[in-house]
Image (cartoon, rainbow, N blue to C red; front, side, top):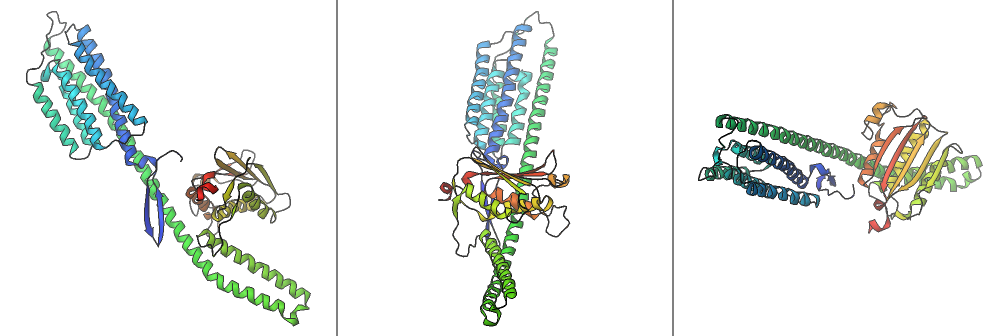
Length: 448
């Protein structure tokens, strides 16, 4: 929705350009931010672990450590984390190079800390493996190899003249036991961090797979709509000529002198002409929805007039008093009427009238910068399987060919306009379909 960066892809099929909107979770830039956030979370754990380890070794075991230098190194990591959070919150894109630089900074910080506390003999030197694993999972070649080279160089530097740990004479444990304990703590730390890290990566992959599945489903639905549109447009073109011939023939019959005096026949011819004109209007509506307006310009109107016209249209075909309309929209705005939107709203009203011909309620209100339109009935409600698959094609309990396309078209037309539709069963009986549509999709200012 609004405020979320979306990337778009276009594909040609059947001469029609399709536009696929990728969900935010599928965006490469968003993946970079998620990975940087993951690194900052692991770094906070490392900062906490370093402070706890320094406190235990220096104060509990009495081993003299260069506290100022070690705390400055830890503070630098914390400062890097704060800066990373600020950049993440600002929407900055993080490339593989940026992630590799962050990992290299961690390698340098760990090298400094180890050089101040025993060098390569420090059991926590095994933490370099964690950086290699992070680089191999998060980065594309050749960056992981750069991390490997950096860690090997760090180990080489640590082997040259490190600051030795001076163990006190009254140390409560032997140096061998202390080393083994440090190695065990290091192993547990690496294991815990890897479980947290791999778990987060797995969740990111599941999100990625779900987003990809949604894109594929949307592409399949849009392909279906394209085929339906082409079929409807072709049928409308084919029907246009015979309908025009019928209209001319009926006009000629009504003007024939020998038929003018037959009032009953004139009445039937008038009904036939009305039916033909109605069919021609339907054909024009199909072509208009398909983008072939046949010389008819888009209609400039207002939101209230647009809704009033739909309600009046359907009220005339229902039992008097069956349709109740509550206009709570508020201040009116100028819009360009969308024939496809009018058609799918009419489909919802038709569905409601089919199951509840004597009680239909339509409510229009303004919610922020969106139109909220609710169509409720007193019918039996939606079957559970329909609610579970709302908006998918050919999901219908009516048992007739082509059933379920109305709600499918509703969902897809609204999605094209940036809106959405939902359905629910009312507690006091019947069903309710809710349409939420951004006003900017129809407003005059947005149509240039």
